[in-house]
Length: 286
Image 1 (cartoon, rainbow, N blue to C red):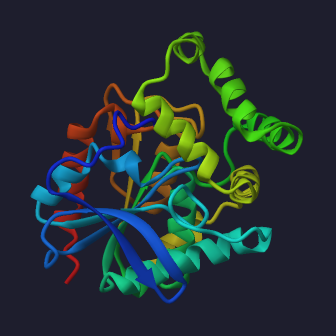
Image 2 (cartoon, rainbow, N blue to C red):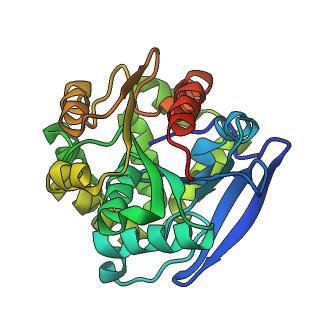
């Protein structure tokens, strides 16, 4: 998961609600409201705050940048029905968001958000000026991640959700376990709150999507929407070699952000923002 350094929006970044034909979505926004729109979708267990390190630079770069909590994520409400989180339903939400923001948006999806964004572009290419797949691969995740997702699903069915959070921290790394033993900071509390407020059914259903997603690269290439493949220089969710090969199949520009892992948005925000702005500038929404 992405772990933003803070949940406090910087000056010039606003909290807002985006009303759409499919419901209201909690969002953060930066930049001139009259500027071309960039819509950012977070990954599995993430939230709109994952993009806070990027928003000021992207807004200053000439875009109205809006990051959202998806259906059932953190501060966006969601139903308890698994069918509501089917891939086609989440993709329809993205299309409704693009329409509500004026259409022809530059779309970016991180990890799970990339799979959802891809489905939205395939379904209705004319709504989008471009698509950036950030640390999101061609199909299901690596076998190691599939096994972790299965363990998480079992844990969510057998344990209290707060206990699952503590177990995840202990398994993540020795440093994470040590941090969990220390008094919680405000950031620690907000990360835990985000986990608790995200619907369990959303986690279970989207976790299954990550483990079973089909290869839709040829469909995306046929959409005609310009694509940019971005990742860190290492990734254990989708190996970077898979992302390299996907970019070749798409004929898409490929950015590896030095010093970053699965979340270049939080690991190296300056370099990531520069790469995004260069791509968006090369493909104006008009």
